Length: 269
Length: 76
Image (cartoon, rainbow over all chains, first blue to last red; front, side, top):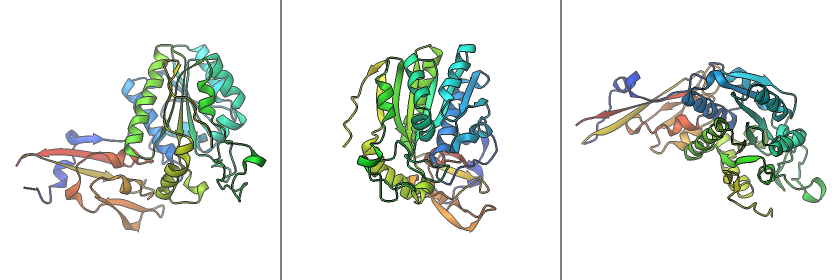
């Protein structure tokens, strides 16, 4: 027999709580567009810090881009870095306080364009930090211009006829690039567009913080995300488009585990 | 037989109406309200609360973390 009209008030009480936004996210409304993956990634990182009980020992480095105000939403110690310089700032913080947990949170314009040098050298030195890299294939904040990670044929405000590889070069798979470097310990690519994908990302992000505890080396996690405003789609369409177009080129999964490459970089078509 | 029933509470003023919870709900509980909140977004609400199992999929994908999930086991 099915219970019809269960007393909702009876279900909604503190002892039946299953899921609640973590208290490490501030009460400020997120400044992101509706449906943006940034909110999910923020929350998942904060959930892990909450679960591990390291709120007082974690320092985040905020980038330049849409997530420039990340320090407003994350209730931990944060430092704002210049454009692209977050891995360098994180290196300094980690070397001053080796016992603290340090992570950077960067977008593709920040990490893969202006900050390529800092990223590659921090990864090559094997600094004991975690890097979260949000890849949406576009410069979202400045108006949807072409980024290094924009797919071939993808339209943006500076490539209105689609990216032409002969003229503008090929998209940069920076995650596969840093996996080749000896300093990285854990490299993975994830998405946050479905509940399953979010749960998988949470496991990987937890591993990134645990690697820091054990002084293993640099953990680098790319999150393929949507940019529905930049792509000029609704959030649901953008996630579908991402699944059909972004994910074949940026396949999710672990690339490097325990310092060993587990998945060979696929050839770009 | 015991039945597991769930319920969600949505912070309507923070909901941005992206509809990601609607497509991720396995039992098709959520719909968007015709009314709008203070920011002008159509917010989500429970249209079929009987079907909710409290799986928390909607809360996990919600970018703004506006959904709180509760679950209770009912004995027949």
